[in-house]
Length: 93
Image 1: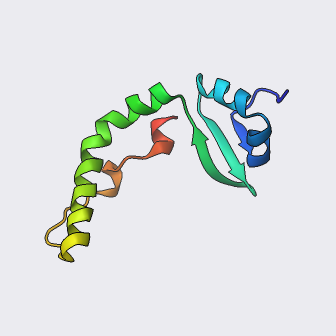
Image 2 (image 1 turned 90 degrees about the horizontal axis):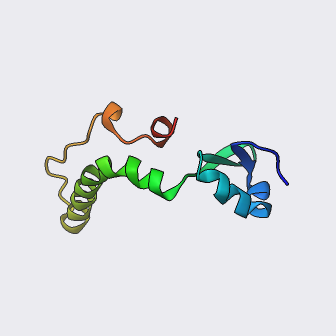
């Protein structure tokens, strides 16, 4: 059994997937591959609670991107300042 930790290699995550899921219910689990972060597994309820306030912004952005792709006209697309964008690292700290 893997000792208590929030950090896993991709190989450990594969071998101990059930444990990884169980621990994600209490706090985010960080997965690394070749020493680089590749994923964070979080409880589904926590994810949806944290994501909900940002859904309208994401939906609007996707609609604007779809329109740009359809027409080729960038028009006056407004991008949110970097500080107002959704940041998973800050959200789950």
